[in-house]
Length: 316
Image 1 (cartoon, helix red, strand yellow):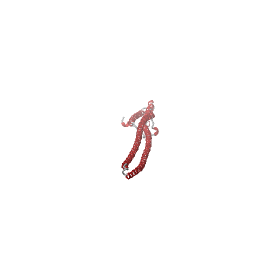
Image 2 (spheres, rainbow, N blue to C red; image 1 turned 180 degrees about the vertical axis):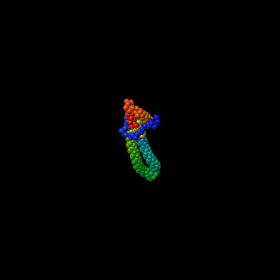
Image 3 (tube, rainbow, N blue to C red; image 1 turned 90 degrees about the horizontal axis):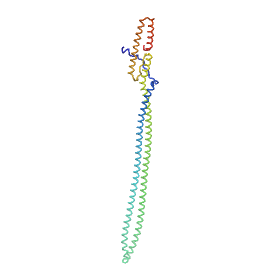
Image 4 (tube, helix red, strand yellow; image 1 turned 45 degrees about the vertical axis):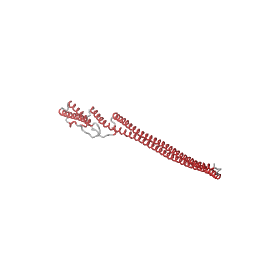
C-alpha cells in the first residue's frame, strides 16, 4: 500500500471552545491542584522570607533608634554633670580667691596695726605720738572692718550673679537637650509608623501577587493539560468509533495541541485501514459485477458493500 493511500483525508480545523477546556476533569484538576499546591508553598515561603526580612529590618532600625536615644540621654546627663562640676569648681576657685584676698588684706592690716601698737606702747615717752597712733590704729580697724564687710558684700553679690548665670546656663542646656530628645523621639515614632505602613504594604503586595500568580498558574495548567487531554480525548472517541466499525473522516488537532506526532501516527494508521476498506469495497463491486445479480451470493455481497459504505461514511 502506498503512502498516498495511507494519508487520511483532512477536515477543517476545529475551533477551541471555553466550555471544552476540562475534557478530563480528574486528570486536569489533579495536575492543576498539584501545581497550585507547589506554587502556594513557594509563594508562601517567598512571602515569609520577604516579610521576615522587612520585620527584622524594622526591629533593627527600632533598636538602633533606641540605642541612639539612650546614648544621647547618657551624653546629655554627662554634659550636664560636667557643666555642673565645672561650675562648682569655678565657684570654689572664686570663693578661694576671695578668701585669700581677704586673708592678704587682713595680714597687711594686722602688720600695719602691729607697728601702730608698738608706737602706742611707747606712750610714756611719746604721749602725743602714741595718742595719734592709737587713733590711727582704731580708725584702721574700723576701716578694715568696713572694707571687709564691703568686700564680703561684693563677693556675695558676685557669687550670687555667678550662681544665677550657672543655673540659667544649666536650665538653658537642659531645655536644649530636652528639645533635641523630644525631636528624636518624634522622629523615631514617625519612622516606626512609616516602617509599619511599608511592611503592611509589602505584606499586602506579596499576598496579592501570590493570589494572582496562583490563579495564573492554575489557569495556565488547565490550558496546558487541555492541550494534552484534548488529543487523548479525541483519539479515545475515534477508538470508540472504530470499535463500532465507524471509519469516517478524522479531524486534525488544534494549533498548539500536544501529541502532534503521536496523532499523526494514529491518523496514518486510521488512513491505512480506510484505504484497505476502500480496496476491499472495490473488489466487492468487481465481484458483484461478475456474478448473477439474482443469486444469494449477490445479496450477501450487496449487504457487505452496504456495511462497508456505512463504515467509511464521509471517507468515501
